[in-house]
Amino acid sequence: MELFPAMPLAEWTEAKETFHRFAQIVGKIRLASSNRRNHWWQVPFHPTGRGLTTRPMGGLGEQPLFCVDFDLVRHRLVVDVFDGRSSEFSLIGRSVASFHDRLFETLAGLGIRPEIWAVPFDMGDDTPFAEDTLHARYDPVLINRYWRILSQVVQLLDRFAADFAGKTSPVHHFWHTFDIAVSRFTGRVVRVSPDTDPVAREAYSWEVISSGFWFGDKERPWPAFYSYTAPEPAGLEREPLRPAQAEWLAARGSHLAVLRYDDVRVMEDPVGAVLEFLDSAYQAGARLTGVDTETLASPGGVTDPYYERS
Image (cartoon, rainbow, N blue to C red; front, side, top):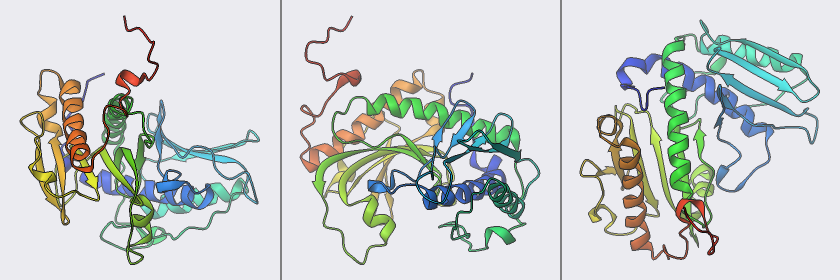
């Protein structure tokens, strides 16, 4: 399998916009049917060997225990109930409206009736999913490539996450922003204004250094690895980054450390370059927030002081 295949945003914008809305519909079902966790950790998807999963949800009340998976090899949406029942349908050829209606019919047939706010979140339009026939391009080749890249990035971020022994999030794929991220927490609680929107209040209630990858959007129309520190300490954008292609970009009043995917693809050691970038951005945030990086280090995922490396 090719490491980091090409994925220019312009090539798959229509497919991405369609699938992103599919993902938001399933993600809202996940949000409505799961137990709340700190920093919204219950909300994101996780990659599987065939696509994406919500993980199990329901099962403690009126809803049965169930799971929704995107099979991006066969290009099917699969709903499994833990009494052995299962139902699935094809993703190919569907508009957002068609996907929405078929999914809720499938769930109802299995005795599952979640209630969601059925409009896109932060996507530039508020067309109800059930009425959206404009977004109707599901491209199997491109969506499978997106999943393969996502899966490679998961493994890379997981390797990076292993070097930190403090509180850290899972590596997870956020369906609202369509990025994949892992977050390291310094342990300090942040005084968040009550006027801040509730999504951000929960996400940033603790000081965090977050790292991840996005596929590009209208504002930055190219895929890239990124990192940021929140709240942002003064002078962060003046801290050094590695490799030389990495840069700080202004973003909504703060700064993102960015390493473009297309730069990484042509490097002699792409994995090493990304790990170097993520570590340099983490060290930048850690220096300015006073993180005890030595105490919180677990090189290669090891904290055992007597472990002998061969």
